Amino acid sequence: MIEQALTETFKVSIVAGLLLLAIMGLVVYIKMIDKRNLKITDERINDLKSDVKESKEEIKAMKEENKEDKKTLRLALETFDRTTKEFQSINSNLNEMKTDITVIKEKLK
Image 1 (cartoon, helix red, strand yellow):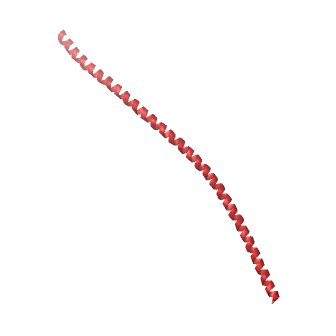
Image 2: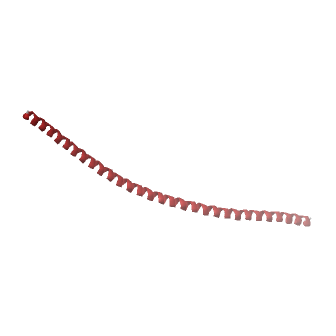
Image 3: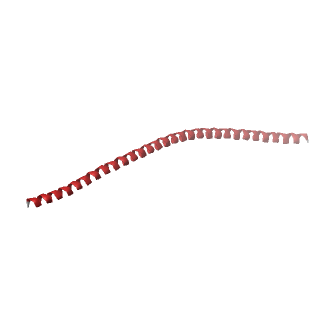
């Protein structure tokens, strides 16, 4: 009876030991996979941070370019406005000259 109990205990110990080894192996494997995944995640995070930084720099450059474009547009509009006023003045002078010429022609007749 003692011999049978020892044999059964030995059989259970072997199974328990194998289960313990399997569990330990799984834990080690999970930790390895976790480390690998963590490394990949960190690399992707760093890539995304780099992309965000580049995007911010591009946005800043675009804002600066937009600012310059607004200045150029404002100057172009001011120039157009001055040119339009000058043409209106020239047109007014031409109309006055036409009137004067008409008056002179009438006087000459």
